[in-house]
Length: 287
Image (cartoon, rainbow, N blue to C red; front, side, top):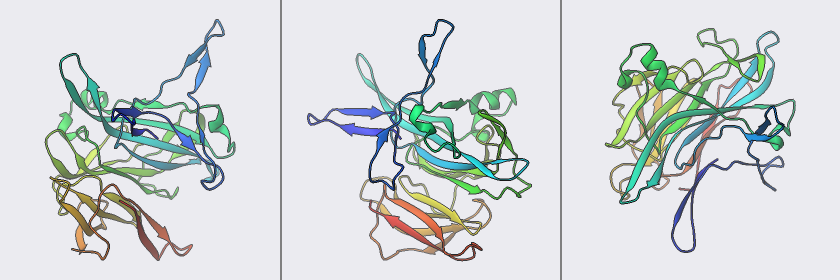
């Protein structure tokens, strides 16, 4: 989803396209922009997230409230960055907007007809609640990480949010934003949403792992991991690993220097090795 491409002449182009694969990555197709027909049967494009790069994305599982069966997945896209071309100068635009799209599992090819993206205006929610923005929503940023934490339908401490495309569907996971690069600096804050991205709470302001961006985060066994990334100059790259066991409120350093080289813009994941979710592995790719 999205990103930035560079032409043979060196010009940059920010993207808002979405590609998908249904055969383990062997072939890919571009998901078309969703449309609807008005009263005159004219095709009207539905909202789409704006062009950007270095956004963060993750997936929430959505369940049927009565049967607890998983029926769809909600894809989130949060924040990012782009350059706005002006008449006399260019402007660096940092984002903290929130988009999501619900995709049906029962209809595996539903995305072939286009994805409808919904926008959550968390800033307006802060204003309505008369809460200062710096205490209510994370600052505009890019190079941050986004993870879902939870997913067990029986977690009674998670607020359930109804899906717009299925009245009986409800979400049951946290969204957690970690670190990134703002207009001012590299940051080490942690923000959590328990209601699908509508309201946010700061879990930590200055985490022990220090300001960084282009890192990766993963979670399993009720633990959150942060590893790699960079801060300041492009030569200040990390190969350290941090762990939180209290949903991002505090972290402890697991290793100062892992055997892999310091890196940023890499990918990482946590993979359980048993159905009981009592053991697992962390893995990183590229960078």
